[in-house]
Length: 406
Image (cartoon, rainbow, N blue to C red; front, side, top):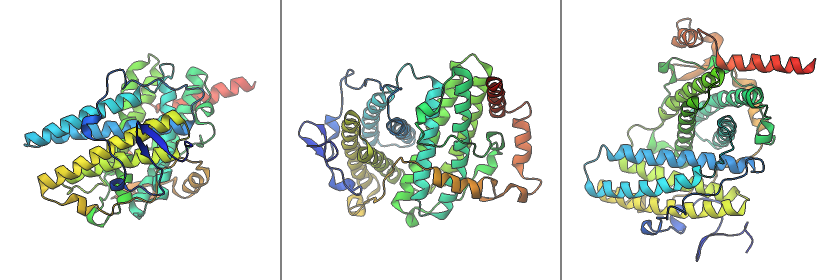
């Protein structure tokens, strides 16, 4: 059969692409069948020069999703007093660690951290556009649009850094799929931590797609923050170290605002089930969009594994909290998927209407309407007190460009 009709994920196991995600109607690999040998969970790396940018974006997004899910279970285990549940969490964490290794090992050794950063920013810009376009909650959509313009600027700054430091052209990475243009200047993104709080949604009145959007963007921003913090130590050039440090702090702000949107009253087991559902949803989305045969096979296999995790989470939810989770989610479906596609028109529309916004008291207002005692004014002065690395990158890039034009 053709690869775009059906995907073979394991012997005698097939996953058929569907118009919508129906997690309880798809094949799941039992937990005990998911363990792999050490040889099997190290993947052959992709070719950074020929990989489709959307395939790279899917890899980076799913690394984010897996890492977030695994460490959420570590945190959960620290606050429960149920030995049987802890054993289940430990088993799933080990499988997810193997899944994560399979994904991380796809990144080749000759891909520099700056190149990976460009890939991360392209992924987050494209992901945020898709989430915003499919978001029914108007307030959450505003948050997504607001942050989109900041991540857009990060892509712009890293592209210039890549040219300065490695004489590389970021267009060779993004392939023109995502615009490399200035967004809300990074130097203006530094805000007082108290100004990063947002209004949370109510789980009972929220669509499943909104919850998936929330979990997806939290995972993506968290992974960028961690990657940039670690990348600081990989360079001796002070400007590169400073720009990675600056970006890590901004991603930390993004993580704070996105996390504050989630319903804080959700029960631990309900949260576990939704995290597992989101992992499966993301793999399902990747499978529907992927064109590279080997990656389709990987996405299909990991989807079937995550469906097994989701089904176990429903069983645990029923046992621990007494909820008939299967009945509760019997008709669960998500009709729209996470898709990567050219997005210039949407980005230009957001740029034209929201570039000058800043958060105030949980809302977004033009900066010229902010009160003079807005905490972030003073905070921004402190952070940029010895200069802005992102502004310095732009100045050096423009200087180099002027020299080359002579």
